[in-house]
Length: 504
Ligand code: BG6
Image 1: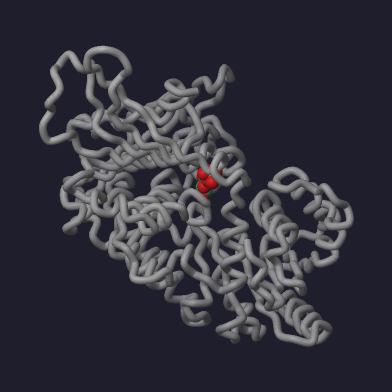
Image 2 (image 1 turned 135 degrees about the vertical axis):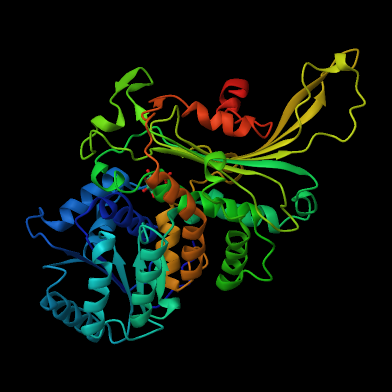
C-alpha cells in the first residue's frame, strides 16, 4: 500500500475492548504501520465501558501477536506503534466521555500543530450507534465534513424499516460522504480483483452475459459454528448475517455494468443498479426461491460437534436458520433469465468462498459420443478464500491416438503470481477510511436496496414455522432442499472442493 496519505489521523475505537478490535482492528492498524501506510502523526484511542481491562496496550499486544499477518518481529517497532495507543474509559451514554475525547483530540492537534482526520469506529452493538453519534454531535466532534468520519459495522439495521430509520437518523448529523458502512467482504483482495478481472481485460466482457453464461453460483461456506456469538446470531440468522450483505455484494461484483470511471459513486451506482434490477420475490415465489436450514450435531474433520440448538446463547427451540440458499434473477438485458444461486451456511464441510460462472454448452456437439463420458461446459471458478485463485475449466484432447476429450484447467494463483501475502480486508478498509475513499463501503441506497431484496424471504420465514429444523448435519453441505431447488431448474451445486480432489 502506498504511503501517500500524509494527513494526521486519530482513530477513535468505540468498543475497543471487544472481539473485533482484538482480532481485526488492532492487527490491521499494526500491519498498516509496519507497511508504512499510516501517516507519521497518528493516534489510536480505545474507548470502552469497562476499565477492568488488563492494561490496554498489553492486551492489544497479545492480539497483534495472535492475529496479525505480520507478527511482532521487532520490539522497537512495536513500542513505536504502542506509543500511539491511548485509552479512555467511560459509559458511552455519558457526555463526560465525549468531553474527555474532545479535550484529548484538541490537545493532540495542538501538540501536532495541525488539524487531523478523526475516524470514529463503531465496534459496538447496532442499538447504541445512534446514541454515540448524537453524543459526538453534541460534543462538536461531528462538524467537519472533510475530516470527521463515522465507521459502522454490520449489521446495519435488522430489516428494511430499521435500516432506513438508522440511515435517516444518522444523516441528520453526518453527510453521506462521512459515513463508512463496512461490508468486510468488499475489502478482500480477491473480491476487489473481480473489478480488475472484469474491467481491466477485453477478453471476458463480450461473453459476460446471458448469451454465454448459463447460471452463476456463489458459495460462502464456513466450518465454524456460531462460536461465542449465539446471543447475536440467534436473532439474526444466515439471511441477515451473510446474504443481505456479503453474498449480495459478491453478486453485484459479478453482475454490474462497467462503471465509467473508478470513482466511489460511479462504482456504487452500478452496484445499486444490480440490486434494483433483482426480480422481487413474493410470498408465492419464496418457497421455490429460498431454502433455510439449521445444523444438527455432526462431525467435522473427525471431531463431534454439537447441534446449533445446543450452542451457548441459543434458544433450545430456536427456528433461526444457520444456512440459507436463494435463487435470484436480474431483470435487465444482460442477465434476463440467468439464475444466480447464492448459498451460505455454518458448520458445513469446509471453509470456502467461491464464485462459479457456469457457461452454456457449445451450440453443436460435433464429437462422437465415444469422445468423452461427459463433456463439461466451460466453467470459471473464482476462489475468494482460503485459496485465492481463478481457474478456467475447458475441454482438451487427451494425448494419444483417437479423439478423447477431458476437462482441463488454466489457473491463476495469487500467491504464485505475486509471491506476497494479500493484506487483510480490514487493512484495506481502514486505509480507505483514512484517505476518505468510499468505493468499498455501502452507501445508504445500497443498504436500502439490499434489504429490499431479502425482505420477502424474511417475512415468509418469520410467518412460517420451520418444523423440519434441524435439517442438516454439521459437516455436510446443507439441507437436501437446496439441491432440489437447483434440480428444478436442471442444475446442481458444483462441489466446491472439486479441485482439491482432482488436482492436489
Ligand atoms: C461476518 C458474519 O460478517 O462474516 C460472521 O457476521 C461470519 O457470522 C463472518 O462468520 C465470515 O467472514 P470471513 O471473512 O471469515 O469469511
